[in-house]
Length: 240
Image (cartoon, rainbow, N blue to C red):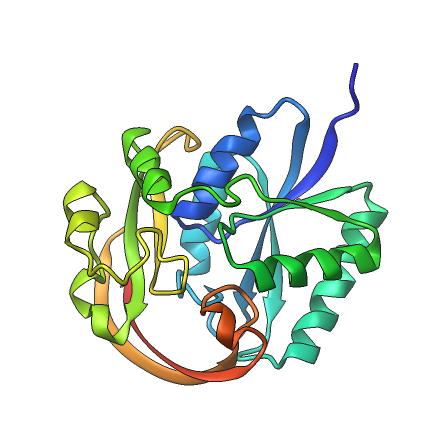
C-alpha cells in the first residue's frame, strides 16, 4: 500500500478553497489532518475575508476536519507574518505533516513564496487547482451545487458584495474581472455543497467600506504588488 501524504489544508472558507478541498478529499493519496486558517486576533475574523470566527468554526464542524487557527496581529508586516507562520509550520512538521495544500490558481510569485517558506521547514506544497481555467473552475463549482456568498469586494464592485455566486452573476462581471476573483477582486464564504455535511446557516448584516495599508502576503492582490505594502479599499458584508 502506498504511503498517504499527511497534510494540512490552508482553509480560507471561500469557493477556491472549497473546490480545492473537494479535489483533495477525492485523492486517496491525501490525508488531511487540519484545516488551517489565519485569524486576525483583534477582531476574531478570518484574515482578509472578514468572516467571523464563529462561522469559520461552523464550516469546519460541517466538513468534519479539525480546525487549526493561526492568530495574527492586525496588519502584520512581512517579517512578523513569516515568523509566526514558520513557528506553526515547524510544529506541523514535528507532528508528521509532510505537505501543505493551497487553493491558488495562477499567481506564480505567490506559489514560489509558499514553496520556499515550506522548504525552510521541510514541507512540500500541493496545488489542486493550479493552472486550471478559472471560468471552468467556477462553472464546475456551481455545477457541483456548491453555494457561496461574496463577503468582500474591491471598491468598484460594491454591487456584488453580499450576492450568492451563480451563472448570471458570473456572466455579468466586467471582462477585466477574473471569474474566480483570483487577482483579489472579491472573496467569498462557502456554506453548502458536497464537502459540507450540513448547510452552514447565517444571516447578513451591514455593509461597510474599509481602506487600509497592508503587505500583500496572502494572495489577495495581483503579482505586481506581491510582498509590497499597498493601500486597499474593500466593501465588506457582515455575516453572523
